[in-house]
Amino acid sequence: MTTAERVRRINPSPSTAAAQRVRELKGRGLTIHDLTVGEPDFDTPGHVKAAAIAAIEAGETKYTPVDGTPALRAAIAGKLRQRHGLEYGDGRITVGGGAKQVIFLALMATLDAGDEVVVPAPYWVSYPDMVLANDGTPVIVDCPEADGFKLTPGRLRPALTDRTRWVVLNTPGNPTGAAYTPGELRALADVLLEHPHVRVLTDEIYDEIWYDDGDNPSLAAVEPRLADRVFLTNGVSKTYAMTGWRIGYGAGPADLVTAINTLQSQISSCPSSVSQAAAAAALAGPQEFVRETVGVYRERRDTTVKLIEDIPGLSCLTPSGGFYLLVNCRPYLGRFTPEGKRIENDEDFCRHLLESQQVAVIHGSAYGAPGYFRISFATATHHLTEACARIATACAALTERPS
Ligand code: PLP
Image 1 (cartoon, rainbow, N blue to C red):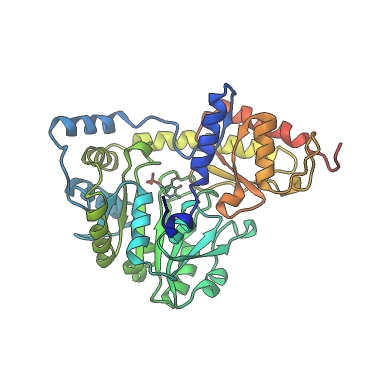
Image 2 (image 1 turned 180 degrees about the horizontal axis):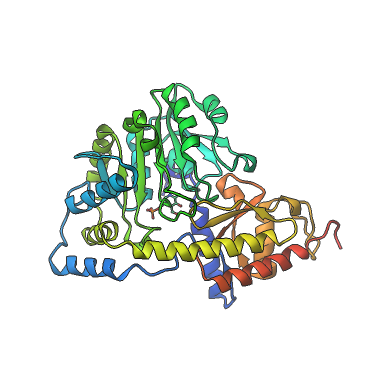
């Protein structure tokens, strides 16, 4: 079989590959301390499951409108109004099989060969490959730790060209947990207002898993003049522990939403009717689950940041949201394992953690962050404590010279 050029341009997601490696090792009977998982370790709330069962029993098992059921779109509009004061009327919201699919469709609907998409690094692994799969050119803009891993006006401006179609802003971000303040969004908005041909895709999938004061701000609300150029994407996967239900959504300009719906009508017709009923219950129903789980994540975040900071040579910024830490392991590059192997890069470092201490993490290069690795703290505290103790042991075993 000859695969299409677009498939040969892209890689399978490194997080999926890491999960596969962990499964293989576990299959061989090894105990793996797995910090790679990018999904909540909680079960979907009971009232959400009940809504899905009720939908099945009420016969809601047929195709729905391409852009989602009216009930789900109303629940999404309600959330965006309540949280950000944003109004999205008819034809400005669409629903897909996860935020991932919605983002992919937005790129598919707007990119022609050679069109550019600005992707600040560190980035969620899928953005560059999604751009490539849709014939675009990712323009990676390095956002160093010294800038809090965030895009600044000074770095954004020179990255914009006549071919720029999109700037991607993931806030709070995967893998850093960094989130833009209203002031930082304001400063980026000023640059974007100078370039009316550029649209902004905000990925707000971690918006409710939020630790700072106030609410996570949204660009479309901070600068209403950009509202017609922002495509706000989000979903229920992370907030409501619903990764397997596959429901995400996008809200933005009507022409873009129409184009996405046209593609969706030929791709999957609509997202799962039962999952949509569940998502509507999650968004419109009681929110105690979110408050409780965010409290648990916060404790895990604080514990893990402290444990990492206590390991000589490792450091990380405290995330504002999400459930990841991006850990700086640069001081260990160039050191040697007890077997005499030189740690050349973050991938070698992560291999050393896995082989010597059975701790699985994801190397930073996968996220455009060489010299770092990502920890997910969406797992029980005793796992985090044990894994961090093992990371400390693995670090202590690395020497300046081969032994
Ligand atoms: N955006 C980011 C930044 C993510 O980390 C993820 C999942 O890992 C997604 C989007 C995809 O979410 P969904 O499950 O809604 O497709």
